[in-house]
Length: 186
Image (cartoon, rainbow, N blue to C red; front, side):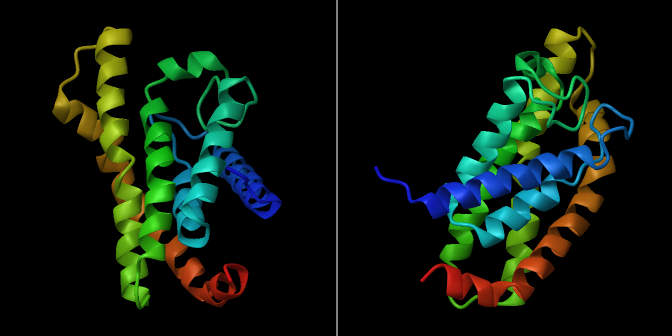
């Protein structure tokens, strides 16, 4: 399959945006750090094609796993990051960005309300694999005994409201840029 240079450029720019979003609040504390990556994932999903969104997150993950310090939490990169409690959220972003992009493409006619709902649904997607992975790492790798309630209190409750706000801001920005969609995807 031939991939156009424009697709590669968009995916690379998306990976750069994800990297920048992860590093802005890098030193915030907590098991699950505050990050602008959910904002960037939703913005990418709402403005890119599904392949571009998937490739961008894949490049971002690949860069981080080979050791480039692009992740939000210490050690910020390297293959051992797979053992970090937050790695499941990164896998969730790999699902969320192309899912949002595909859903946006299928949206006829697009309305601000539909874009806002899609953004909120998209930001919720990473919580499935993220919370499951968080439980797995905390219990089976780190030897902590934490139940589902503890995982929800640690990785969901402090972050869902800010993530919804980030999603709505990404949705509003994408909605304002909707005329660019029409021009760039002809």
